[in-house]
Image 1 (cartoon, rainbow, N blue to C red):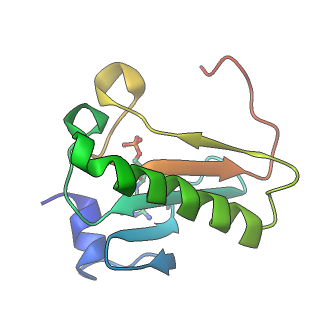
Image 2 (tube, protein in one colour):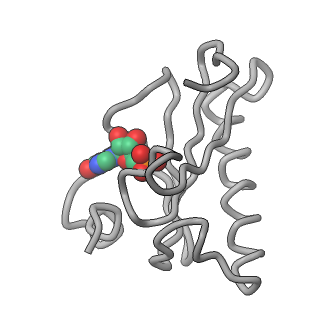
Length: 112
Ligand code: 5GP
């Protein structure tokens, strides 16, 4: 069981900003920006490599939830970044698919 499944099960606490039957969104506990929120499907997909065509709507909903949280967090106009890390070179550390919403500061490009 990953740490995110334990958050979904309320076994460990998190600052939850959004939840529905399919998704949960909570603040990253090692924030890399003034706004750093993780949008996580409740379905335990290990990484973007395991996404199937049946998950297309789910991935779309993850982006829409991130967009809505960007607005409520006040970063929609200033801008933000949506990131999905995959495996070692992508910097993935939790093997449960998730999207990062980062904003509230200027992001560098290219990423380090
Ligand atoms: P990844 O590196 O896999 O793309 O992102 C995993 C993220 O999960 C990291 O940014 C990390 O700070 C965050 N994270 C890891 N453990 C916890 C936790 O117990 N609670 C919260 N809120 N975030 C966590």
